[in-house]
Length: 442
View 1 (cartoon, rainbow, N blue to C red):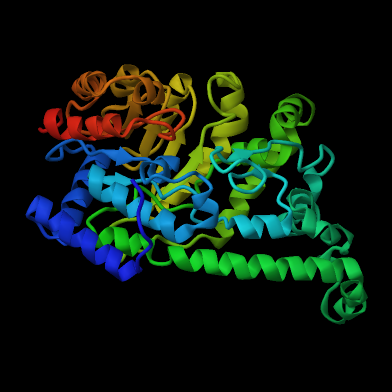
View 2: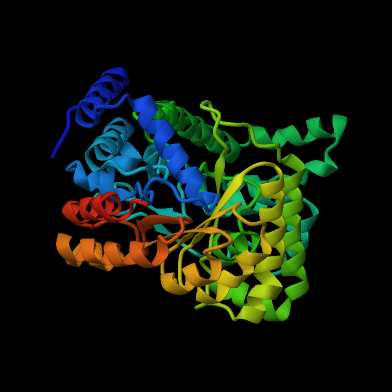
């Protein structure tokens, strides 16, 4: 299936007409029904049926007949693919679409080194890759703790973007208060800084064009009757995994847990302090509903990387503090257990009842329901392997059993598991969504 590029207004108008013709309901009515269904599940009430969460990754692009490079270089087509998928599959709500924030041309202009992306430094049909490494050195914890902004500007950014290497030659801005700033501007006249400025200008121009194509997507989706599962960012992101994934890398963080645990813990607390200082109470969205926010993915905090004792020491204290702060500000945190998390489930009993949506991928769902069913909403977990290699009837049977076990009494959202939907068969994705409508009614 391929699509022709059309205006945003025409795209939404046609999609809305198609949805209303198919369902016999106004899209605003569908939106309110879905929000209530989701809210009831999160608050541990029985909704009319089990809600379904759809992941918006490369699946939507491949379903529309394109390669993954479209998400980095052709945002108008990517946006159309998102809308087409919403209309055709009719889930209740979805993840934010994959890569709505990174222009491939901007990444090229900045010589991005922490990522590899299709159509840029990977083939057009490849999958986006993150390059883990020690972007923060073992002796730089104090620099981060003292001034995170200065560290990011003069140490982190020059390492992850080749075009920003001159930033490493800048003096600490805290030392250049008031009139002391002017003498340092001689640096900006040097050729390497002029080259950097040109790269920033190119990147900014490309990123602006890219971002404009995605402007208003949330409202367009709502106009078609589809809420988002959560909004990116927020206070409650998991600090330990920030250091493990983005700053120290697997080798570095493993060493730090033994050689410099006090520095690691202090840095995790600093991240929470930094975010809380800027946090604002949650406003309702445009339709008056509570904001759900992304709350971190358990990569290196999962069962397979660290023990329970290590989780209790390095990960949970700062993350719990961040989650509780988020809840107190009026948000609904949505932690993502991206990995095996059976030994992490019990910790969520320490959070207030019916305040989070815990999305699981490789957990034992029956055990998760037994342990958390009366305390927090869980989501999961149709395996990617089944969606790629199985049949529609096998997917339906799996979902039927999953709903039977986890759907009792509410507090369950059917969603997709490990690895996303990149190569899933469309008929299998549709079978999973339809199974909730067939077997998930209360």
